[in-house]
Image (cartoon, rainbow, N blue to C red; front, side):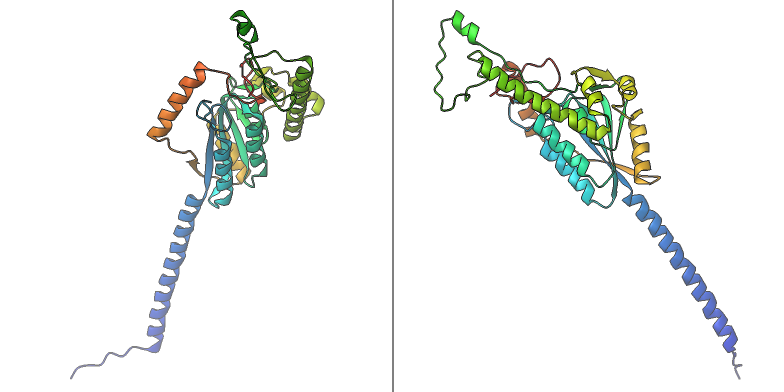
Length: 308
């Protein structure tokens, strides 16, 4: 006869308890691993390049920074829960007033901390954008500042006189052809344009003063259009830290209160058509440089531009 093996209720309960403990620890371990994996994936820093002249795109401008695109990147980074901070990777001499202000406003509205990294150049309109961020990092040899406004154009009136060419203007509105390259500015027109420039200039100074928490009078002293190297800019309070991309990342992580993060670059990939358009645009732009450009621009000094 076969012997029946008897299992006591105590042994069965002990076995079940051991199994439950093992399952519990496996579950805890799985949760920990998942949380670690999730944390590693969600901690990201968005890097948004701002490289080239800032302005609304047109076929002859040579412009490479579209404000609408940069603003959409900033908005997208703010809506993405995995993005903890934003770095603006700046290498730009500036651009038009409206375009620069549009990006600067988007930076100020950002709910995520924003660090501006100035590479070779972060001047004029580009500096306006940088000043709107939480912190500015630049290398010792970076060019910053150039706070000012310029409006310039090429005039052909003397050349036309030499070759006996007459300019006839048919217009409805006394100042409709103000800034035409085919005639000299009248004294009244010059005063009107200078008054407008001064208003934009005052607004630029006001914004930098607010953004950098520097007195209006101090910014006005610096707003001569002069450029400053990184060391000079730091001493004047125009930037916060001397450093490179690693420094910007370090500050971004500190502002976001995170220890590790993955960098994600927001950048539209160029197509063959984009390359061809940019090449042809630059060729024609350089042939007629200054023609068909904005009347008022925050731009690199000493650049001739024609108002249209």
